[in-house]
Length: 124
Image (tube, rainbow, N blue to C red; front, side, top):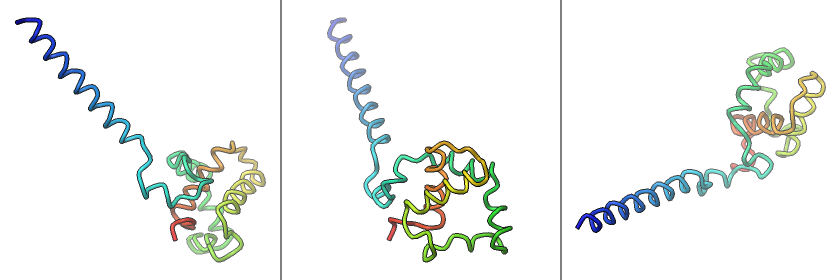
């Protein structure tokens, strides 16, 4: 009788463990629609890192000095930045010109945040 009870408990434990693994896999899997509108160049970008870098390097303050107002006029999707690649290239240019020494994944993270918040390439 004890063996049957122990096996029953073991089976329930295995079932719970498998259910937990299935939930974890669902949580980690790309969500349909959530990432499908994101341009390929920005998929997997660390958005939290991008937000931190924008604050750390005070990008909005620099843009305000260059265009006036609140600085948001610099984000003009109908302007010369018309593709996700051009956006990433502009962030890379800022990094170079201002000697920020951002790593490629950091440039992508910043560009992905700018795309999410201002340009919205791929969301149309």
